[in-house]
Amino acid sequence: MDIDNLADRVIAGERRALARAITLVESSRADHRALAVELGRRLAGTERQALRLGMSGTPGVGKSTFIESFGMLLTAKGMKVAVLAVDPSSARSGGSILGDKTRMELLSRNPDAFIRPSPSQTQLGGVARRTREVVTLCEAAGYDIVLIETVGVGQSETMVAEMSDVFLLLLAPAGGDELQGVKRGIMEIADMILINKADGALKPVASRTCADYAGALRLLRKRAMDPEGFPKAMTVSAVSGDGLETAWDEIMTLAQWRREHGHWDGRRAEQARHWFEEEVRMGLLAQLTRSPEMRDRMYALGSKVADGRMAPAVAAYEILSALGAVD
Image 1 (cartoon, rainbow, N blue to C red):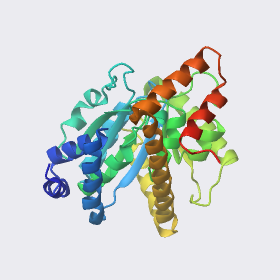
Image 2 (image 1 turned 180 degrees about the vertical axis):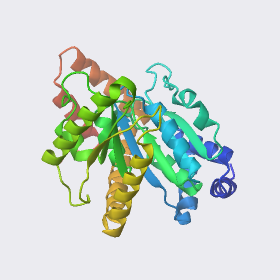
Image 3 (image 1 turned 45 degrees about the vertical axis):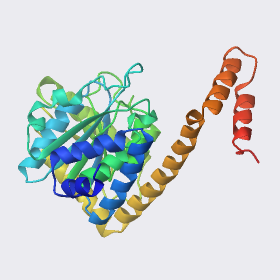
């Protein structure tokens, strides 16, 4: 594979080249990883930066509908938008089982939008292991906005917050206890909470839910990297489009404030260090399954743990000792 040619085509914004580069980066084959690293070195000098928006939300909240409406709004403003939709994987085939792209028909046909569904491949947090590398590919290809949609609500917020500039939490109008979803962990991560489906009969409910979340945000959190009024809760409707323009204005206000006050570069530097350490950890873990001898030993010890003949901590100690990872 001619990496220089592929890199030049990615930089030129060729969609087919970008798709091919992402496939290369997501591959677990050793030869492909070596080529992917070389591609990363080749693209490192572009110094293009996109606004990275992370987004998560409860199942059924309308994430795909929101992304399509929001993406169409941004492309209408002359921006190029890349959407990385991380689907949960099939445990049997490893394939993507939700098919986000099929639910974004308008955006997927938009020449200024690029949608890439990626199976999470059992990666914890609902974020594919190579998602951060894919983000840099999209930036090198000239996309202005990279939106990373993650699976569900839980650890995924932590993972996506470590690769985004602004993190959005999409929630539906509450049906009972309006504060049920307000948990400390979410308050520490979310930059904006968007209450979707604020239209029709649900509009008054959405307004009340928004007020409850706004109050909780004021009570629970104020960060030095936030301007006055952030984090905040807002109502939007992906169907009617109400609130989307205002939400975009608020996102830009937050991003610009962080740039002007020196938080932007610091945040990205911390994220880069985090993913460097994470890549090292994942690489070391992969060594356990790459060696046939170690794989057999893992299986044997796992069998002993499963039937109660050995404690998990003891079995883990044996493996770590074999790797020289115990003092």
